[in-house]
Image 1 (spheres, rainbow, N blue to C red):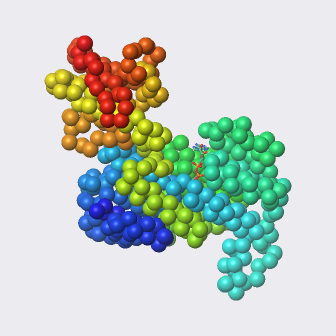
Image 2: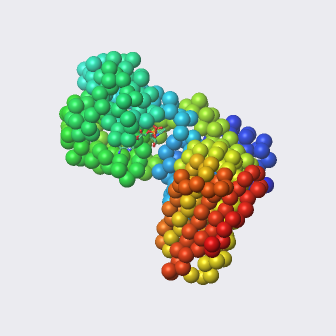
Image 3: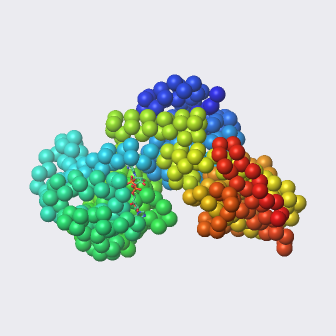
Length: 443
Ligand code: NAD
Ligand code: MLT
């Protein structure tokens, strides 16, 4: 029976899927360190939201873990490299909370513009402050969207309804998919200088860390406002606090923080013209149910049927093709095992795989061959997820290609291995389900 740990709060709908599948479910949102330690050694799957941090330390304590399911989008709280090295699939639920995050962005932008948070707080303190809380209209203002993915595009749709002008920056999307009547694509510096409002919708990755530091904040208009419903760490909090308290920008609405939960000495708490929410972007009934149901179903399908949806660290995009070429994959794995025996302890230098005939993609075949080869050298669990990184760690160069060479076989997998001046050649062909053969060994 598979054992599943759920260490962040998720909606019941998802837990029901796991229970119905007959899994043993440990549902402990926010476990203590000792509790966590006691679970890790024998769990098969681990489901989290943004509250749990999975580092290489936790992963090193797992022995059976096959899949980490992130009920949400951002995977910056998971050490993907370590998971990949251990052959653990990481999957997320990328579109379950898009609308909620986009709506929260709009709510933040509107509340900030009209000082709603200050109005509310001052009334609660017995004050009636109409004169000092004069806001700005959104109509006609320029909204700069950084990150034109799922959430960024939903924000654009809603902002167009408010008659805002949209400018956007995202170096990884094709400009042609946007209607130039609705959005002007521009460089990051130009967007920063032009916008009245800037909303961030990028993941936290190396290139976005502290994207908004004091230098960029100084580029913004004095009257401009910044909204971050993406991730803490994209904005430098000390710099933002300085910018707000010194009139460098007019306001900021922040949902996500460098350290969560927010500490009482965080400089943002004492900043002027700020609106803070405790990571509420995805906190709606609809999104909670959607991501919980979706990720639990994905994890169940992976454990029971090896079906992969939304994998983050799987080198093969279309997993459905694997079933159709199963006999070629089995053949390749066996060729890898045989070549390892022929190597006779000489260090492996390079592996080249050439596919001929009716083979459309050489990558899964090459990876399967490497699995057979490397599995024979290690007690690690080698699979599609980690085989590339293990090969790289061991300095094994591997190439794979499709060749138009003619052959009397309907398909042919040719393997050539070099090892200290020695060359090993093996060829194999598959002709149907479970029907495959080695057709050449060492010429
Ligand atoms: P997405 O992958 O659809 O879009 C992200 C976009 O950012 C992509 O188009 C990508 O090309 C772009 N990008 C990457 N690096 C960039 C860079 N250096 N400069 C400009 N653009 C860059 O993701 P999404 O679903 O729109 O979500 C975006 C982020 O929002 C997530 O990574 C997550 O961290 C965050 N999020 C937060 C909440 C919340 O509760 N506050 C909820 C959902 C998502
Ligand atoms: C996400 O990345 O999906 C959000 O941060 C929501 C969350 O899981 O809390």
